[in-house]
Length: 250
Image 1: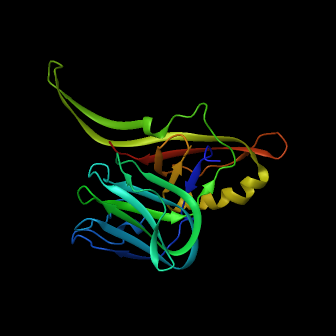
Image 2: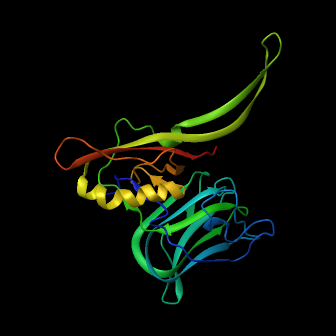
Image 3: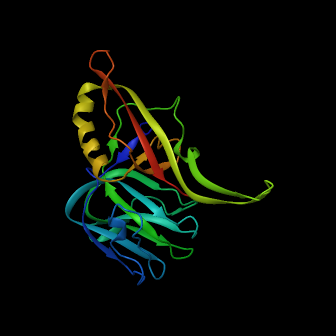
């Protein structure tokens, strides 16, 4: 069910060969194929496409995007797959309303090439684009969870006069941080799915959409430490907490 979190990590996203319709001289066509966020792709004109060729048929059910300014640039987004010689839409053309990470879920299909199409507005910059089949958490969460987009952690530096007058304040950096807690996970599910996630978290950032059917907030995250499942005492059930620090945006 889409009340259950989806996690896109380096063990379930797909590598391939990148082709961009155009790329500005100061940017990189393959920047979004790098998990770091400082190397970005920017087209020179719109509409523009960024394509990933897997070199063979692969199952795909999501397109995840982070480190972008498509909301600021009033971009419309389309996700497409290459099907029998033509490009087929996977989602309706969507006006992007902000710069938070994006997690597009659609019916799983198997093809060799997928792409995003950006149009309208001004040329955007995009730092991360991933395709694959997400980890589907076995249980939902709701009560006690602090939504990621409300969990801002901003480092500020204030300036005051000798008499204490406010002279201004500088925002140094912003990130988001929260904890995802899952209880009553079956031991069989954890033993099948959790180790690949642990190894992926050690290596790369990851995307998490905690309740896709209800809320739009998505995190592009790193974990300060690897999450370790614990036996709860109830037969064949386990629990786990995942602490995350997510990419900041305004």
